[in-house]
Length: 167
Image (cartoon, rainbow, N blue to C red; front, side):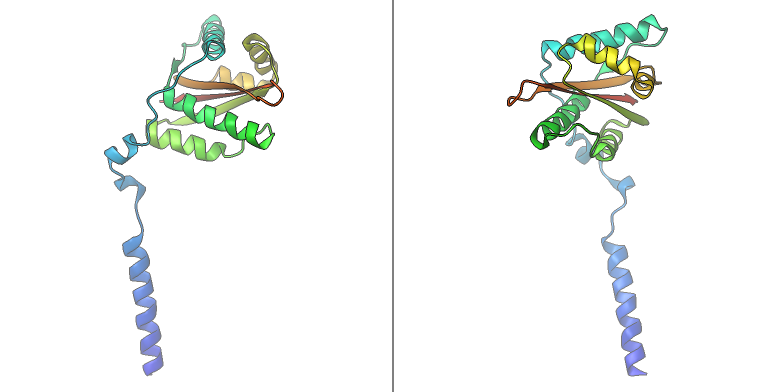
């Protein structure tokens, strides 16, 4: 009997502790979310040219031009740096990037294009437009985008990460 009572008290205290220590994302303060926002990003000429090409294409097919967001370009740059450091071309951690953009910027949907080893923005755009999935992202129901294009110092090859969001 004493043993059952102790077990019951232990279970109740564990449940109480777990519930009292858990956090609810909906109670996250605006201040803490805004502190995650990366407001500054310096664009290079290739990134600006690529964004212009994407917007020109969108307008040519009757879509709205996208507005750039520095935070999304910073998240793109993080991914380029990851791909260069690990010598890979992939969408690893896209879920984490998209969740961050949804939380920090209030995005409803997020999508991503990557490219590797294209020497010009036009060549990267042509490749994306030739790929149904990438083209769908470029023509998607988005309002904003960010981009990063980084060169691997070891071999000179360029890594492109382009993130789209509807905010």
